Length: 449
Image (cartoon, rainbow, N blue to C red; front, side, top):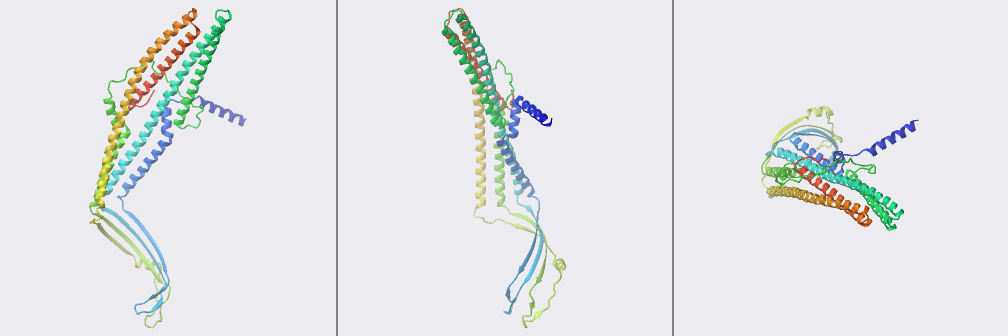
């Protein structure tokens, strides 16, 4: 019973997953959360977060301790030229603290630069998310387009079946020759082939979308069908407002602006090397000494009895403290500091140029999307007119065929023209919708269908 219950539960889970249809928002959320490129950029942002924490903690004093043991063996020469063994044991311990008092604000400037670097890294991650979201939206619309083309193919197959059924009847009664039935059969085969191609296109586009999402179980993947408007409105007359909005909200532009501030801080950091730095230090230390080899009288050479205090007594008696302030004044470092400042200023110029490049890229993207929207809208209007005329031609062809004034070849040709016109309308509609969604995205409106 347990095995049967487990199998039933597993089957129900698999069926539930296979029946799940993803919305566009679910696809975008999943990709943003699980895409490896997004995760990689998040790791880079985490590294910058740690760099910021390190920069802030540089202001704190540093404390370190040491503990040393040393054993030396061998002979030494005394002051009067006598040679003797000098085997001894040394032990020492110390604790020291150091704190920066003045460095012309270098530590503060470093922390501010790290903050800018973190913000730029987060904006880079946001740009990757936006790029993936746009790719997903475009592929999602491609799936919907292919499904609409499949519906057109289904309708064409149904009509071809009706034509074949009528052709069989008229051929049997002798009204039409066998060629009419043969052509109707061939027409149905062509429509079924087109239907199968439409099915394959749906699966191919679903597969591409699943690969963007990096799904492992792509075979059961499907999306929700979104009802799109039958009539479309013309795009805006100008892109100036959209460009200004894009400059304000696009992460690549804001990241470039932030990197200018980071480069300026780096220049300020490099200039601090022209000024002296002051630090304070304090320490505690003690030591222990014990001579292993006997101590000899340098005159008589006889052994002298020497008593050494215990380890802890020596530690207590030899305990010392120190405190002080040190200053490091730059005088001449081969002109390296000056060159570093010049390098930092060049980096500022590079950052400013990068900002201009990003603005040009965003402006071109907006203008391209605007051009595509207008072109796709004009194409959509033209496709609608073609659809109307081919539909009217098909209606005349059907009536003429029924009246015996048109051949089945004329009917199939009119039907093919109408099917192609329907496909062109769908293609133009979806292209226009993506272009307008892209314009809305640059204007700061989230992606949605």
